[in-house]
Length: 82
Image (spheres, rainbow, N blue to C red):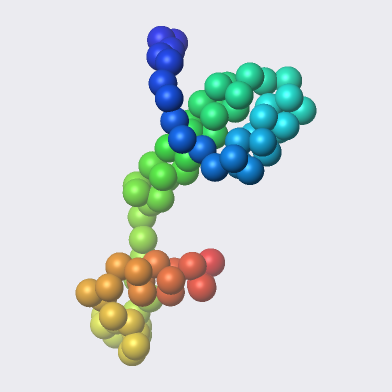
């Protein structure tokens, strides 16, 4: 794997917590951040690629009160049902 050096801005408290977690897990701060970013990207890919079944009335229509033009309302509804 090819690695690169970069500069990022991190909240002071979060940086302290991350440093402590890295030390506890015997990792460098860079390894901890890289691992966290890889997990985030994998989780995002799962969400983007997951198949979604919209709740319906059973007659082929969307359940009353479901606004199909609002992604956030649909995601909220799906989160409530899981």
